[in-house]
Length: 234
Image (cartoon, rainbow, N blue to C red; front, side, top):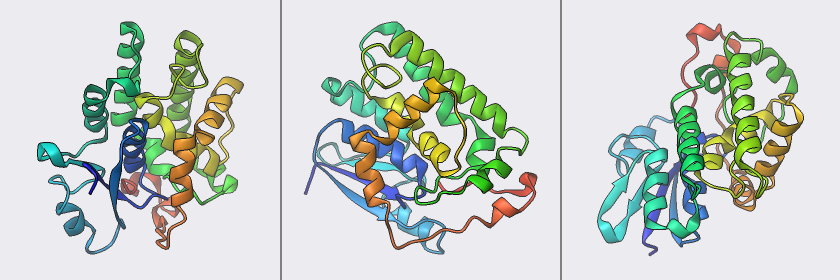
């Protein structure tokens, strides 16, 4: 058994799981996976076996008898344990901004999360056009584009990612890049190039290949008034 086990939701849908998984993948260590289908009657009980919050992702560290049940906390733990992975930039100003934008993604953009749920297999420009007209979605997209453009301009000279090399901030925004492809969201050139860098990131492609799962989640809330829509699957 590997020293690390990460508990995930469906790879096609679980944006939070993708964030934690990419951070772990960046560390180039062996790990096992437990994938639990979401939005089923037994989902909460199944996750509770591995995560005290009943949410995913959860990282179990066997040699420390430790469980970490939040994607940002997973990234912070891994950055301390595997500094050579470069999950955060080495330079202090860049590191501070990387943490800030990852935290903003972690806690913000509720309209985008609700109206454009991650669905990696789907390609639906018509739905995207409709959902981006919902109040708050365009504002969330504009803020994300501004973050991407700012980070690329200030810190991205050494590579195609927000801070040059891929890291925890890119893991935080990878599900958004996927959403922008799913719903054909139009982006300006710098943001589009960054989206493409995420989509061709080998670690992301490994996840995407595994997202061809037997489970299907419908999102009937996309056909309801926005104010009544529940939070999408984690």
